[in-house]
Image (cartoon, rainbow, N blue to C red; front, side, top):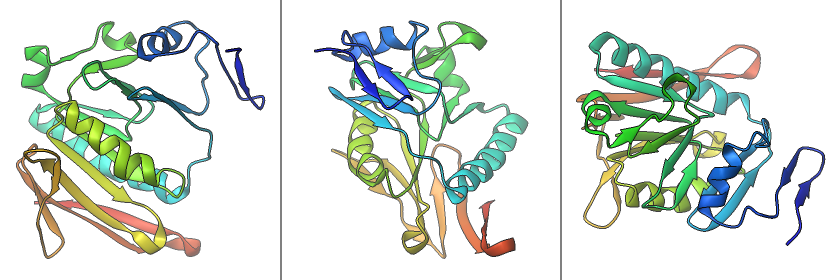
Amino acid sequence: MSTIVIGEQARIPAWVVDHDSFRRWIYSGDFPERGQFFHLNGELWVNLSMETLSHNKIKQVIAMVLGSFIYETKAGLYVGDRMMLTNLDAVLSAEPDGMFIAAPTLRSGEVVLEQGDESLEVMGTPDMVLEVVSKTSVRKDTMTLPDLYYRAGIREYWLVDSRPDHFRFDIFRTGRRKYRATRKTDGWITSGVFGKSFRLLVNEGREGTSDYRLEMR
C-alpha cells in the first residue's frame, strides 16, 4: 500500500499498518500537528473536522473544576485534550478530551509517563476518561471507545453529548461485562473515582451561545 495523502493536511506513511507501527509514527517527527489520528482495535481513525464552540467550552469547564479539585487535594494528575492515551492490552491509542490519573495509579506503575514532562503518550490505565460527543464523533464516542476503554480497565467513562438537541451528561462505571450508567438524582451523578457528586448545567449565554457550569458537592 502506498502513502495515503489526505488533502494537504496529512500524509499517512505506507508502513503504518498496525498498532506498533502507528506508535512509531507518533515518535517519527512526521506525525501531523493538526487533526486527530487514533488507532482503535486494528482500525486507523482520522478526524479533520473543526471543533465547535460548545465542544470546546464543555471541555474547558470540566477541566477547570476537576483540575482545581485535583490540585487542591493533591489527588493526582488531570490531563487535558491533545494528549495520546495508549493501552497495549486494548490495542488502543486515542486522544480523550480529558483524563484523570490518581496518585496511587501513578505510584503503582499502572500509568507510565516514559519521558516525564516531554512524554507524548500516557501509557496504561488512567482512572477516568472524558469524551465530548459532536456530530462527527457519535459512533466513536458512544460505541467504539466505550468498549475499548472498558477493555483497558478504566474505572469511569465521562460522556457529554454537546449536540444542542441531544445534550446530556453521564458517568459510566465498570460493570461485569461493560460500562453501566450511574443513576442520577435531580441531575446529580456520584463519581466513585472522585468521591463527589457532579451535575453539568447549560444556560443561555451571550450572542446566542450557551454557558456551561459543572457543579460539585
